Length: 422
Image (cartoon, rainbow, N blue to C red; front, top):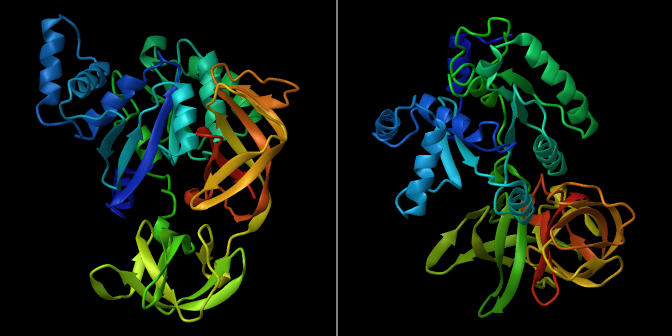
């Protein structure tokens, strides 16, 4: 049932500094630009004077106000090098800020997500109520499933074009639900809406009294951002060792917080010690270093530590393994064959590896399943089992992205990948 406005507003005030990264996917003509324009308009997130400017353009063309023009106009400004970067679009509710990650095409979307250029925490899948489920709807849905996104809203857009018909909504839903279930997607919400008219985006409107669920903004506000990097177990990737008057272990805090006095374990060796000091150039008495910080540490005991080692908290250590499952996106004209030896890099770790098994290979343009393949070719996506020539510290991409994201190299980068199971 729909929350009361008072309940919703109270929930929204819980954490105004949160940010949730959101991606909108769906068929090219199903209204993504219009929905983004409506979200920006309804949340007062457009630059000052922008909506008046677009209204005047529409008036001059003799057309009604069209929210798709908002995106067109912002893209024109970006192309002219003015002020807006449409790869990162922002809007804000009372609860939190949202970042919309632009996904211009499914091939680029797969490449960006797997190689780490963007990390969506939630998704909106658009379906045109009039046209129903299309091939690109299925492709984008599969990508969301492949990337492990769990927080998903399905929106049935353009309900105004089908007379706000519940029968049509139910008809499209009966086609979509079995497909999504078959690829492991269980959407949190399925919402009928008209982005053009504004029904069920931020405001309920009066056209669909038969729907008593949440609006898009209310549904988004129920989602949870990924756990902050600061809340995760501490991970410190060793980059180098410097010996001056002290033996300083230099590296980067990939997750969590490192404090002076913390007990630590060095992986994969398993040696243990305590942080004696944190060393930063020009600073004295540094007591802590947080996720994202490049810094140096001195340990109480002399340890054998080398580049590629991962320092962790003893009670929350990740697995050390030489075998894992992953998704890879191949980006070289020369294919990768089963058993071929290739360089694997994850954080500061490096090893030689080979694909032991291709469990699934897909054409990234069509998402056609390529049966019986023992290699992966340019712009193909694969589920694989990889074995490295030495143990590494690896984690599921959705838990600690920095230790779950990798590249494969010959003379240059050939693939990006994410670890799905250690």
